[in-house]
Image (cartoon, rainbow over all chains, first blue to last red; front, side, top):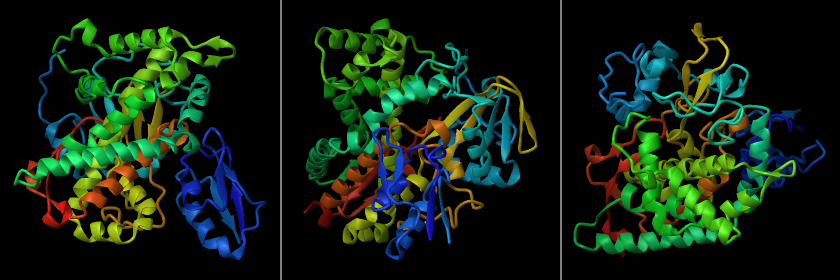
Length: 64
Length: 408
């Protein structure tokens, strides 16, 4: 599973950072920063799904 | 302008968000309109629209070309400061100025900046709970969770952040009532020294004389391209922080307590599984989102088969978007561990609530501290609860009985 983060769509809701801190950090302005280089380790797939399903701006997408 | 208003008889063609029926029953009105007339119109306030579907609310929130933020609170008065700055930047600003004004404030409200406030907030809440439990020991066990608990929390936190005395909180609530809850329809004269503008200018002068490391100090030190902010910019932004951070958070805390008072199973789950709180807070925000924003149509546009004319007001009822069955499964149920929850309680698009991290922290801590001291409580009388109307919805009178095992 690959995770794609669209920084332009992110509005800093910080839902991904709260639910998936292993995948997302935030910068000083509160915008999300994806910590991985795309490929999601198997153990983190449910977390990646959670981050995706709670982003109000559809800034996170998953690809199989 | 007269304060006399006719009661609403037809919500599709004559709605009024300041009608007492709307204050009491807004969710039912949104649900009905969403199926019968998803983009409703009213001639009140010079002409306004109310979309109720998530899709339409989201479209407007993301379209700054046709919808301007120069008016975010529907009023009988026209906003008197034009775009792109507006009277309270950045909430009333449009691109491109919006981003400049917002960037300035973002670091002060990021998760990292808010985290250190949690301890102070927890202490405030614990003190309030001490007072509440003591007041309830008079034999009645009844307290008002809105008046005696929820409303004090954001007032104290904002006063702390702005660096003004906590006892100024009563004045904040007066400003909010006058400016937000009556939508400009208040006829009572206000003495110049009682106005919010006078209060803020006084605080700015105090801060200029004795510089301090707080939000007002931060704004006075800030610059845009090397130029200090204009006085109007500083004034407007402080007004925004005062007005936007208080009754909104108060409403979310009160509505969540209102829910928990009626749902012993949800109280029990939160006490037994405190790790559920991260999900529960978002679900309570979805179900009881307090804030409806507004826009001014800046260029004629079609929406849901209707034509919105330049100058019309548009209400953006985010709480209605949060109840749209096309977007959420079982939207009328509170499911504390809901896993798919793209709620819009903090808005959508470039104006996402600047204080969302602060509000989320306050709500979380307020519920944790309440449940820690009083895990069991109930409404004394469901009919005694009073909700605020206008664009910020939440309980303003909320009598609850603290049950015996809770007080012990």
